[in-house]
Image (cartoon, rainbow, N blue to C red):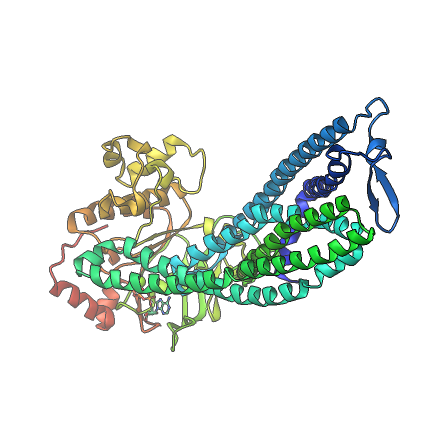
Length: 608
Ligand SMILES: Nc1ncnc2c1ncn2[C@@H]1O[C@H](COP(=O)(O)OP(=O)(O)O)[C@@H](O)[C@H]1O
Ligand SMILES: [Mg+2]
């Protein structure tokens, strides 16, 4: 199905309103045509020194040959021609104006509605994408395509669509006047049409291509901007302002270049049509004069004809321009629909079971994983059983695959071979929302939303129980510093929580996890960013969080690991050793080596 048709499909819910606006615009078009017909009684009766006494024959509707007489529309009591013409003019302009305004309002309403629906759909789709998608697409580019593609569609759907109806119906009405008055003369005037239309259409497709390039260049610009904003500290620290400015300028230059090319192309159709119009006018004057001299045509009819033709110029000009804009919108909707149709990497199977509570065990059964862009496996045939209530520590050198291992449990990614099971059920058979409800994650980087402290702790839940929220904050050792904030729990935290220290951010993340109260917990180097003092607090908060849960803890400090029921040593994607601290120390393998390495450094061992 073409993008245009598919976009049109979005109006189905608003079909009634759309039909009404089409009707209003049709009336408007008829009034536009009637406007030009009134010139005849004005010329022949109102302004004539010797008025024709016969009733004014306004127009013969072509094909049905029905003659419309102006006087017959009015009651017999009104017979003064000036009054009749005056009332007609005023009525036509009032009706035309009212229909135009209402029709415009309604089409805009439908257009904005459609775009709002589409925008919501795109955002919902964005949220359903897996980790791979977000790694493959930069934030700037994604934002640009969500915002600017849809903006383009919005222009076409609202303003431009109203204009399309307006100009189309005006054109129809005026065409009827032109051909109804004198079809030979009409035909003569329209002979020039293909010479105008064909080159314009060709230009249209070129403009469409340029428009796409404009968008890519805008995306690139956004990307640089976005990176410079979120990485402002790095930019400053490395004195890279000039480098970034240069990058930005290069991208801006590319945008300038494609924009100018677009302007160059877009400007061509208008002067072209104007010249063709002037040529037509001279020809018509010549032909019309001959017909009037022969008595075939009356001067009044010729005036209506010319006026209608003159008015036709506007719809023609607008419609060719509109054509360009719709071409761009079609291009944009192709991109948006292409995006909407992208398969989602991670979805719930139809009829997937809900996970209600967690009773027995988490099992990794011969699990292998490889990133789409990687050359070798990051997890190679890993088998591990974690019993309910167990604390399992994952240790190993950086890049061993620890985070990757943990990310398979909440299905941020799916394994390429083997299966991850909860209580014996493959996580791919469990509905996503219920799976993730049962798992909390506290990672190295905490993302805090630019919202109140309370909303960040109760993230995703509305009308959270305030008492329970405070309890969670207390258990996370966050209550005291929250109380000291200007508005306590109602204080707005800045973007990425910049107003908070690392330890405070982490304790908010822990409060969030405690509040969520899910049976399974993943801690991925939750303390590795922190200085010793904050780490001590965070460790205490973590201990509160871990009680009564099944925990996978990835830790860089051996001290964190000692209390685990089971220590799993990962190395190059394989399980190298499993055991308790003492067992592994005795074994004298990788764990022993890591342990020695830790002691070689100044380590303030903080026990859980
Ligand atoms: N998104 C990704 N795309 C490709 N390779 C990745 C991606 N994330 C991690 N890797 C690679 O996978 C390996 C394991 O990474 P990770 O699980 O983060 O290790 P760890 O948490 O043990 O430090 C590393 O070699 C890393 O370079
Ligand atoms: Mg990691």
